[in-house]
Length: 143
Picture 1 (cartoon, rainbow, N blue to C red):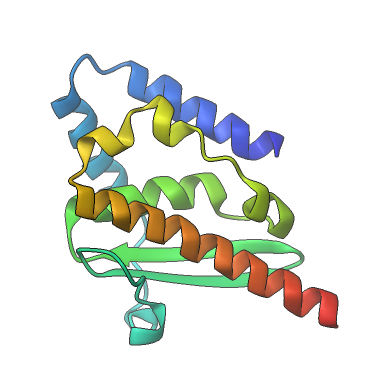
Picture 2 (spheres, rainbow, N blue to C red):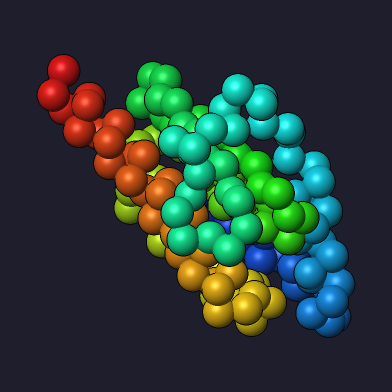
């Protein structure tokens, strides 16, 4: 869990550099722009996160007990939000994703930047990432 917490702490530190909410909002958008593009063949209905106001695609693959998350969105702010989650959880161990306490969300006041619908979408993204981890754990245990 240390690696996840280190990444979260770095994000908290980065967001602390901004004096106002608008600058933080712009930073979220920039993070989204830096995220690698999701291959078009993965932008399928099966990968759409249910419960998001915007369209968010989230795909996960497991390799050697770690999860690789690939994501995208059709809006810049939502892409930034999913990029933050991917930054924290990508390439982490299955159990660490399952048990991650994503405290950075509260520490950077992320929900205060969002409408209630987008906040619900954030919860849906987190839930989907943890569901992928649970599915991989179940598959691994069944093998």
